[in-house]
Amino acid sequence: MEKKTERYDVVIIGGGAAGLTAGIYCGRARLKTLLIEKALVGGLATYTNEIENYPGFPEGSSGLGLMDLFHKQAKKFGVEFKLTDVRSVDFSGEEKIVETFRNRYVAKAVIVASGGKPRLTGAKNEADFLYDKGISFCATCDAAANTDKTVMVIGSGDAAIEEGMFLTKFASKVIVSVMHEDGKMDCNEIAKAEALANPKMEFAWNTVVDSFEGEGRLERVVLKNVKTEELTPYTVDSCFLFIGYLPNTELFRDMLDMNRGGYLLTNEKMETNIPGIFAVGDVRDKFLKQVATAVGDGAVAGYAAEKYIAEGEVYSRQILNEGGPSFVYIYNAIDPAGRELLPLIEQFEEKHKGEIPVSRVDVYKSTGIADKLNVSVFPSAVLINNNQVVAVLEKDINEADLEKLAAKLG
Ligand SMILES: Cc1cc2nc3c(=O)[nH]c(=O)nc-3n(C[C@H](O)[C@H](O)[C@H](O)COP(=O)(O)OP(=O)(O)OC[C@H]3O[C@@H](n4cnc5c(N)ncnc54)[C@H](O)[C@@H]3O)c2cc1C
Image (cartoon, protein in one colour):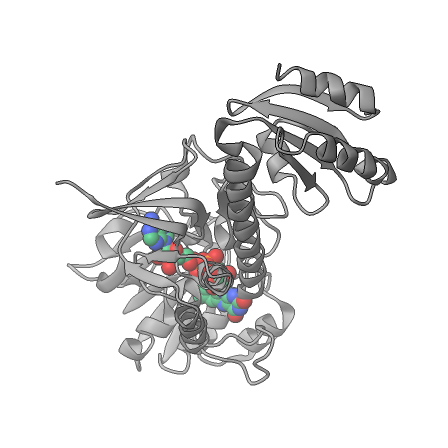
């Protein structure tokens, strides 16, 4: 099947908090922006019933409600949405390719915001009961179906305990399997105190899941005591796994730099190792994975992508001068040495008017053009012809050197 090709300034992969924020920034910068989401726009945050720590909502907000506002704002700024999954990418050329089942999207920049997926326990028969067969990852989605039932929660981090407490509003009993010693949990102290005081919550300390059992649907979870190896079957209606997440980065393996856990590595501008490819939110290696930090990442990447595209246009139109001769003075505006040479550059420009176009590039805000020209010493004067760097002068540039440079054009 011949795929339809469409062109965008920016393609965003993933419609969670990070991708939607990047979309708001790109859309507002009037970039033609496409966001591709394979499941639910809003991402993982929609799984949670209550978000209490996102600033601006002192009464808290449901994850779904909050993400709906992000979505509306991105649409308001003209971001286009496609509900399908990205199957492959090719970031090797200047133009970035993102492919879905039916379409091929060509973009000047791509923002990877693909987040993570829930980690599994690896216990026996787990795959047989995932999602609608009794093992769930979303209390908001499945709590009502467990009204007056017995459920199990695996894990003791913030998500496990907070979502477990939410489940007590519906279920008659919530058994929490914790791998640590009695009373030791990974969640914050407030959640821990509330959970321990909750009469509907029961704790199975020092345990991990050994197997999931049932006829067609989950009926029992067998827990193993990590100290005694004793196996105890618990009859439950559902089991909720909250034992962490794995990054959705399979598509980018051997392409984008990652840490050992598969999280993408970026600098503070959210740039990956490939120019024009940015990564934001839970998919990247960072200290705190939350909605607030996903929003910060998205804002930075949206802004950085805009600068990258604008620089790319200046580079191809002005700096490369359609293959003709071009002179570029690259300096840092906060460095006096760079500023002091500006009158000399002006004099050179005047002398060679109509012969060599002169551009000035300040690397203070971005080194993008300098990077494209492979220049890392500032100030530098670069002569370009036939789309190639002909010669570079560094640091102590004087009039005679500039003239020698110009003479290279013959
Ligand atoms: C139960 C729970 C409770 C939480 N509670 C809080 C809280 O109280 N406060 C807080 O700040 N944070 C909370 N978080 C964390 C918060 O949800 C995340 O930090 C946030 O969602 C990260 O946003 P993101 O955009 O980086 O990734 P995600 O929200 O994971 O979004 C990534 C999106 O990319 C999509 N995607 C992946 N691969 C592809 C592909 N190939 N093609 C197309 N789309 C793709 C996914 O479908 C997904 O929608 C909670 C998380 C959970 C699970």
